[in-house]
Image (cartoon, rainbow, N blue to C red; front, side):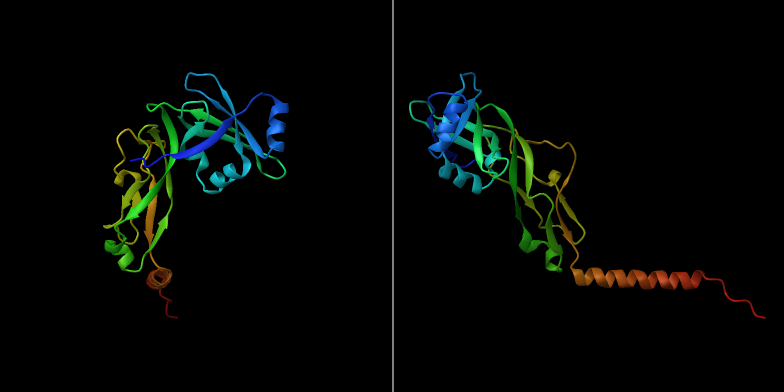
Length: 217
């Protein structure tokens, strides 16, 4: 289940509009807005370098944060948009949405692979390929899993691991309504080359056997 939720520290922004936003950027802040949750929107500022640290950590748009703003109660939020400068690509505005514990949201959840040491396919030299290192799930905000686990201990070369092989946490559901592939075990390049040669030889033999014999003159 979900581990400790990361704090996101901001300060309330006095004033709204383009003028206040430009002033925030001059002071090395990124302006933002917190909305939803049945309460009024709250204009905020986040320190530019502090926000960049979180952005570089990855998965910023799919993580739940505990927003801390002095003078306001802590609230769980998820980022719904990071507006960036069209030339430099740097963040210029951020939108955060408040969540209740019962809110249903879509998040990309990392996939952990276990059972590699017992996997017949890997023991035979097969190669594990992660088709989906993350899976988008619809989850409850109060019960977000850190990860989901795929057991490949019984997969052989040519086998695939699909979403139906994963026991999902209670209340979680894939956003894709089909049994899609998470990972597969493919043959090593040497074995694939040998199999290709065998197939070519078999095709040549079959062609020779099917060819009509030359009539005697």
